[in-house]
Amino acid sequence: MEVCKSLASFMHRLLRARQHRAAWLLLCGRAAEEDAMVTEEWIRGLIKRGELWKFYKSKDWVRLKESVLRDAHYECAECRARGIVTRYDIDAGGQKRRLSTVHHVMRVRQHPELALSRTYRDRDGAEHANLIPVCKACHNRLHPEKRNHRTGDHDRERFTNEERW
Image 1 (tube, rainbow, N blue to C red):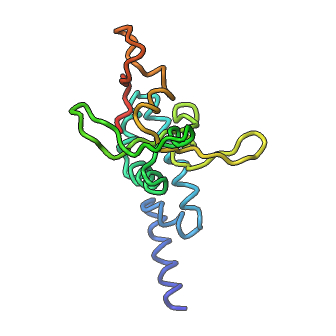
Image 2: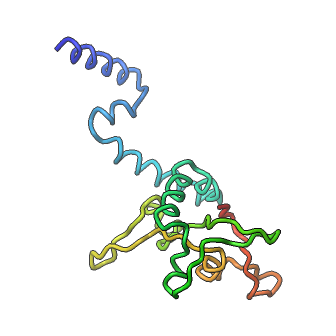
């Protein structure tokens, strides 16, 4: 009983000082809900400022991306759908690199609320994968709008955007 009174007193002082809002939200059981809202607002702000690349460097995204890749055994989902197993990309120096790209099916610019969501629901309520591991070639095919259009080389598989993954 004494511990509860001490905790309540401590929390009350924190609230009065308008500090550690997260502690209050945690106490109320609303921390996860609030964090999701803050993340979405942060992403929307990044989009407005043209700094979406910062999202792709965030700890939350890096952890989630690695988890998605690990769960899929670092295999490209697009290649797998065509009966091909692709676990490596070839870098500019010709070296094999383990797959490191995860594609947002529901694009972050149009759906920032789903940026850290593994799945999404369509209008009928069916659940679909939102994050899929892909090789660089498949990712380029999924994003033809990001190819280098200045050179007129539309077959060249190269991005010209701020996504740095």
